[in-house]
Image (cartoon, rainbow, N blue to C red):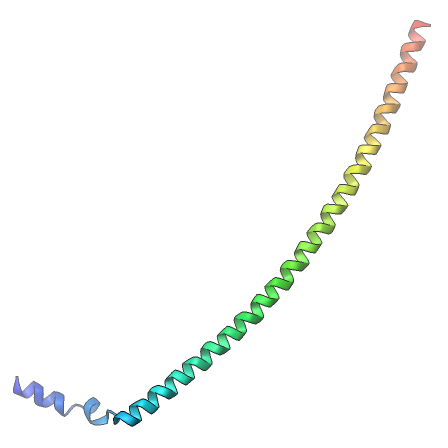
Length: 101
């Protein structure tokens, strides 16, 4: 066991470990770097969210326009159907009147 303890005490990791102020400085630099990366990612996400919102609004507007167009076409078709039905009914009335005359 003594040999392994001796080997551990001479390992490069122990010899190269920074002093507490250096470690604190490295840790602060790491935290700062990570916080900058997080801020950058959050800004990118905000831009994407804004873009998604704008696109969603445009799609919603387009859907409303299409819905209005469909409603207008439906009304026109209903009116045309009523005219055709009235004409057919009138034609049947005329034919029926001719048969009984």
